[in-house]
Figure (cartoon, rainbow, N blue to C red):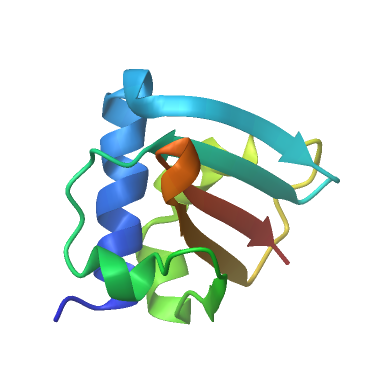
Length: 109
């Protein structure tokens, strides 16, 4: 089983390079972005990391945030925030099959 960080990294990188997979992306508040993307994207252990019709919330590890700062900054720049002074990143995930999308919300704390 892949780790949550592996799956989130894969999704964030894939969406950055293939924006056509994104169905909706919108900032929420000054520190949060909500992304809905096509559920045809193959994700390792998707049923675990993107549960059907319920949320899973995980704090990304400090190592993940430190190693992937540029990638996370690119998503933070889509929020309504003006200061990149976050230390923690929370990922909320879900699969919404009736809309044929995965939901990924990033909260920068």
